[in-house]
Image (cartoon, rainbow, N blue to C red; front, side, top):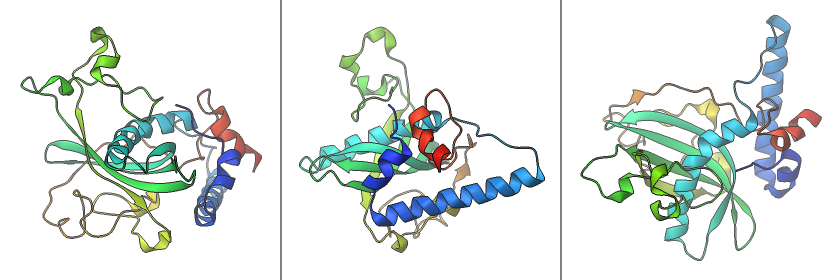
Length: 236
Protein backbone atom coordinates (compact mmCIF):
# COMPACT_ATOMS: atom_id res chain seq x y z
CA UNK A 1 0.00 0.00 0.00
CA UNK A 2 1.37 3.42 -0.99
CA UNK A 3 -0.11 6.69 0.19
CA UNK A 4 -0.69 9.61 -2.19
CA UNK A 5 1.72 12.50 -2.58
CA UNK A 6 0.77 15.67 -0.74
CA UNK A 7 0.56 17.80 -3.90
CA UNK A 8 -1.73 15.22 -5.53
CA UNK A 9 -4.01 14.76 -2.53
CA UNK A 10 -4.44 18.37 -1.42
CA UNK A 11 -6.68 19.57 -4.31
CA UNK A 12 -8.98 16.58 -3.75
CA UNK A 13 -9.71 17.46 -0.10
CA UNK A 14 -12.54 19.69 1.04
CA UNK A 15 -11.66 23.31 1.81
CA UNK A 16 -11.99 22.65 5.54
CA UNK A 17 -9.66 19.64 5.41
CA UNK A 18 -7.15 21.63 3.35
CA UNK A 19 -7.07 24.41 5.95
CA UNK A 20 -6.75 21.90 8.78
CA UNK A 21 -3.84 20.16 7.08
CA UNK A 22 -2.09 23.45 6.26
CA UNK A 23 -2.38 24.53 9.90
CA UNK A 24 -0.87 21.26 11.12
CA UNK A 25 2.03 21.52 8.67
CA UNK A 26 2.72 25.15 9.61
CA UNK A 27 2.70 24.28 13.31
CA UNK A 28 5.03 21.35 12.68
CA UNK A 29 7.42 23.59 10.75
CA UNK A 30 7.34 26.23 13.50
CA UNK A 31 8.16 23.69 16.22
CA UNK A 32 10.89 22.13 14.09
CA UNK A 33 12.58 25.48 13.42
CA UNK A 34 12.43 26.43 17.09
CA UNK A 35 13.89 23.08 18.15
CA UNK A 36 16.68 23.19 15.57
CA UNK A 37 17.74 26.64 16.78
CA UNK A 38 18.16 25.41 20.34
CA UNK A 39 19.20 21.77 19.89
CA UNK A 40 20.85 19.48 17.36
CA UNK A 41 18.59 18.81 14.36
CA UNK A 42 16.16 15.95 14.80
CA UNK A 43 14.88 13.54 12.20
CA UNK A 44 11.68 11.54 12.04
CA UNK A 45 11.65 8.10 13.62
CA UNK A 46 9.78 6.68 10.61
CA UNK A 47 9.37 7.38 6.94
CA UNK A 48 5.97 8.48 5.69
CA UNK A 49 5.39 5.04 4.21
CA UNK A 50 6.29 3.34 7.50
CA UNK A 51 3.90 5.49 9.54
CA UNK A 52 1.12 4.76 7.05
CA UNK A 53 1.85 1.03 7.23
CA UNK A 54 1.41 0.96 11.02
CA UNK A 55 -2.09 2.46 10.73
CA UNK A 56 -3.42 1.09 7.43
CA UNK A 57 -3.77 -2.40 8.89
CA UNK A 58 -6.47 -1.18 11.29
CA UNK A 59 -8.02 1.03 8.58
CA UNK A 60 -8.49 -1.96 6.28
CA UNK A 61 -10.41 -3.93 8.89
CA UNK A 62 -12.56 -0.93 9.81
CA UNK A 63 -13.36 -0.01 6.22
CA UNK A 64 -14.19 -3.59 5.30
CA UNK A 65 -16.67 -3.56 8.20
CA UNK A 66 -18.17 -0.25 7.01
CA UNK A 67 -18.48 -1.36 3.38
CA UNK A 68 -20.16 -4.61 4.41
CA UNK A 69 -22.82 -2.62 6.27
CA UNK A 70 -23.23 -0.04 3.47
CA UNK A 71 -23.17 -2.08 0.23
CA UNK A 72 -24.24 0.88 -1.94
CA UNK A 73 -21.96 3.42 -0.27
CA UNK A 74 -18.53 1.78 -0.29
CA UNK A 75 -15.29 3.68 0.29
CA UNK A 76 -11.63 3.02 -0.49
CA UNK A 77 -8.82 4.06 1.86
CA UNK A 78 -6.85 7.15 0.80
CA UNK A 79 -4.61 8.12 3.74
CA UNK A 80 -4.29 7.04 7.39
CA UNK A 81 -4.26 10.14 9.59
CA UNK A 82 -3.55 9.18 13.20
CA UNK A 83 -4.12 6.48 15.79
CA UNK A 84 -4.07 6.10 19.56
CA UNK A 85 -4.17 2.89 21.59
CA UNK A 86 -4.94 1.69 25.12
CA UNK A 87 -5.41 -1.57 27.03
CA UNK A 88 -9.00 -2.21 28.06
CA UNK A 89 -10.70 -5.47 29.13
CA UNK A 90 -7.46 -7.32 28.51
CA UNK A 91 -7.24 -6.24 24.87
CA UNK A 92 -5.56 -3.48 22.87
CA UNK A 93 -8.02 -0.90 21.54
CA UNK A 94 -7.35 1.64 18.79
CA UNK A 95 -9.00 4.89 17.82
CA UNK A 96 -8.17 5.92 14.27
CA UNK A 97 -8.91 8.76 11.86
CA UNK A 98 -8.37 8.27 8.15
CA UNK A 99 -9.44 9.63 4.78
CA UNK A 100 -11.36 7.43 2.36
CA UNK A 101 -12.84 8.05 -1.08
CA UNK A 102 -16.44 7.29 -2.00
CA UNK A 103 -16.65 4.88 -4.93
CA UNK A 104 -19.86 6.61 -6.00
CA UNK A 105 -19.19 10.35 -5.62
CA UNK A 106 -15.35 10.19 -5.59
CA UNK A 107 -15.36 12.64 -2.66
CA UNK A 108 -12.90 12.13 0.19
CA UNK A 109 -14.36 11.88 3.70
CA UNK A 110 -12.79 11.65 7.15
CA UNK A 111 -13.63 8.54 9.16
CA UNK A 112 -13.39 7.59 12.82
CA UNK A 113 -12.90 3.93 13.68
CA UNK A 114 -12.62 1.95 16.91
CA UNK A 115 -10.91 -1.42 16.54
CA UNK A 116 -9.72 -3.88 19.17
CA UNK A 117 -8.11 -7.29 18.97
CA UNK A 118 -9.16 -10.46 20.78
CA UNK A 119 -6.38 -12.94 21.58
CA UNK A 120 -6.54 -16.14 19.50
CA UNK A 121 -7.94 -19.15 21.33
CA UNK A 122 -7.49 -22.83 20.70
CA UNK A 123 -11.26 -23.22 20.98
CA UNK A 124 -11.92 -20.57 18.33
CA UNK A 125 -12.80 -21.31 14.73
CA UNK A 126 -10.47 -20.91 11.77
CA UNK A 127 -11.20 -17.17 11.90
CA UNK A 128 -8.78 -17.03 14.81
CA UNK A 129 -5.94 -17.69 12.39
CA UNK A 130 -5.78 -14.61 10.22
CA UNK A 131 -2.98 -14.17 7.69
CA UNK A 132 -0.73 -11.22 8.36
CA UNK A 133 -2.64 -8.27 6.85
CA UNK A 134 -0.22 -7.01 4.22
CA UNK A 135 -1.50 -3.66 2.85
CA UNK A 136 -2.75 -3.68 -0.70
CA UNK A 137 -6.48 -4.34 -0.57
CA UNK A 138 -9.36 -2.77 1.30
CA UNK A 139 -10.60 -6.18 2.45
CA UNK A 140 -8.30 -8.23 4.68
CA UNK A 141 -7.42 -11.48 2.91
CA UNK A 142 -9.39 -14.53 3.96
CA UNK A 143 -7.77 -17.73 5.14
CA UNK A 144 -8.65 -19.34 1.80
CA UNK A 145 -6.66 -16.75 -0.15
CA UNK A 146 -3.24 -17.78 1.18
CA UNK A 147 -1.42 -21.04 1.66
CA UNK A 148 -1.76 -22.77 5.00
CA UNK A 149 1.92 -22.41 5.83
CA UNK A 150 1.49 -18.61 6.04
CA UNK A 151 -1.27 -18.76 8.64
CA UNK A 152 -0.29 -17.52 12.08
CA UNK A 153 -2.26 -17.40 15.34
CA UNK A 154 -2.82 -13.64 15.28
CA UNK A 155 -5.27 -11.58 17.31
CA UNK A 156 -8.83 -11.36 15.98
CA UNK A 157 -9.90 -7.86 14.88
CA UNK A 158 -13.21 -6.55 16.20
CA UNK A 159 -14.59 -3.31 14.75
CA UNK A 160 -16.82 -1.57 17.29
CA UNK A 161 -17.34 1.58 15.24
CA UNK A 162 -16.53 2.99 11.81
CA UNK A 163 -18.33 6.18 10.92
CA UNK A 164 -17.97 9.25 8.72
CA UNK A 165 -16.99 12.47 10.47
CA UNK A 166 -19.18 14.96 8.61
CA UNK A 167 -18.23 18.62 8.34
CA UNK A 168 -18.08 21.07 10.01
CA UNK A 169 -15.20 19.35 11.75
CA UNK A 170 -15.09 21.88 14.58
CA UNK A 171 -18.12 20.29 16.25
CA UNK A 172 -16.14 17.16 17.20
CA UNK A 173 -13.80 16.58 20.12
CA UNK A 174 -10.15 15.80 19.44
CA UNK A 175 -9.70 13.76 22.62
CA UNK A 176 -11.28 11.08 24.78
CA UNK A 177 -10.20 9.25 27.93
CA UNK A 178 -7.00 8.08 26.21
CA UNK A 179 -6.63 10.03 22.92
CA UNK A 180 -4.61 13.22 23.38
CA UNK A 181 -5.85 16.36 21.66
CA UNK A 182 -2.63 17.04 19.75
CA UNK A 183 -3.19 13.85 17.76
CA UNK A 184 -6.27 15.46 16.18
CA UNK A 185 -8.33 12.27 16.21
CA UNK A 186 -11.89 13.55 15.82
CA UNK A 187 -14.43 11.49 17.77
CA UNK A 188 -18.18 11.02 17.17
CA UNK A 189 -20.44 12.38 19.87
CA UNK A 190 -22.06 10.45 22.70
CA UNK A 191 -21.73 6.67 23.01
CA UNK A 192 -21.00 5.93 19.37
CA UNK A 193 -17.74 4.36 20.49
CA UNK A 194 -17.11 2.07 23.47
CA UNK A 195 -13.69 2.73 24.96
CA UNK A 196 -13.10 6.12 26.57
CA UNK A 197 -16.46 7.66 25.70
CA UNK A 198 -17.91 10.61 27.58
CA UNK A 199 -20.51 8.69 29.59
CA UNK A 200 -18.41 5.70 30.71
CA UNK A 201 -14.86 7.07 30.80
CA UNK A 202 -14.70 7.36 34.60
CA UNK A 203 -15.87 3.77 35.15
CA UNK A 204 -13.53 2.17 32.64
CA UNK A 205 -10.11 1.02 33.77
CA UNK A 206 -7.78 1.96 30.94
CA UNK A 207 -4.10 1.04 30.91
CA UNK A 208 -1.70 3.00 28.69
CA UNK A 209 0.10 1.24 25.84
CA UNK A 210 3.65 1.88 24.79
CA UNK A 211 3.86 4.40 21.95
CA UNK A 212 5.87 3.84 18.76
CA UNK A 213 6.08 7.59 18.23
CA UNK A 214 3.99 8.02 15.10
CA UNK A 215 4.07 11.53 13.70
CA UNK A 216 1.36 13.56 12.02
CA UNK A 217 0.69 12.87 8.32
CA UNK A 218 3.13 14.39 5.82
CA UNK A 219 5.64 15.33 8.54
CA UNK A 220 7.89 12.26 8.35
CA UNK A 221 11.32 11.95 6.79
CA UNK A 222 11.91 10.99 3.20
CA UNK A 223 12.31 7.24 2.92
CA UNK A 224 12.29 4.46 0.32
CA UNK A 225 8.66 3.65 1.14
CA UNK A 226 7.52 7.26 1.10
CA UNK A 227 9.25 9.14 -1.73
CA UNK A 228 5.96 10.21 -3.29
CA UNK A 229 4.23 10.86 0.01
CA UNK A 230 6.93 13.18 1.34
CA UNK A 231 7.85 14.94 -1.91
CA UNK A 232 5.11 17.53 -1.56
CA UNK A 233 6.23 18.57 1.90
CA UNK A 234 9.82 19.08 0.78
CA UNK A 235 8.71 21.49 -1.95
CA UNK A 236 6.60 23.68 0.37
